[in-house]
Length: 71
Image (cartoon, rainbow, N blue to C red; front, side, top):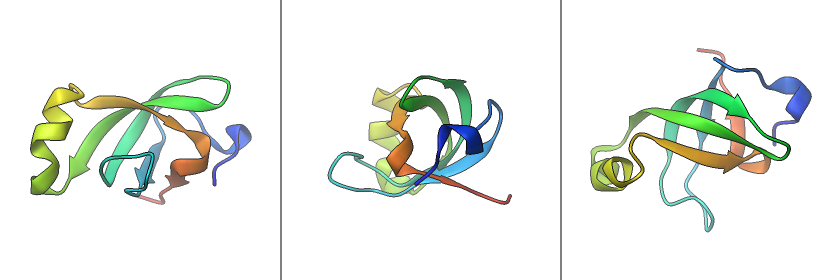
């Protein structure tokens, strides 16, 4: 789980599919809110292409679902 102090705009992150998140993806933080972040979806599995199109390649993700990547 990421803490707000660990996150910054432009940072690369990963998100795993869960009960609250409909797909796994890698993305970039574009805006930080109090308990979540607006994330652009950069890469994902082909099976999620329709979901990503519906989300217009961005979504809001709670900090508990964000994992900071080293890429």
